Length: 86
Image 1 (tube, rainbow, N blue to C red):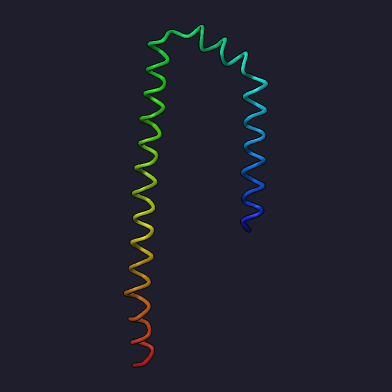
Image 2: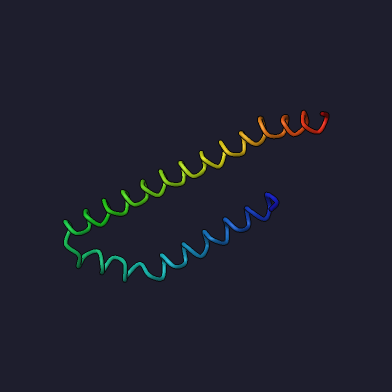
């Protein structure tokens, strides 16, 4: 995907997000005012902890993938070259 295409995707998503927030701002503020502040803090904490757990899972998954690729790249390919010469 070219840089221009990525930029257009980002602009499009930003426009959609701003439009949704602008159209739904009254509903969002009304729902925030009706919710107990303790519940809001609990839900915010739960969401942040969920994001942290997902980030750690992705980090371990990506590290495993990188290690597998590096193992293949630095150990398997030279071994295959040596074996093909023999």
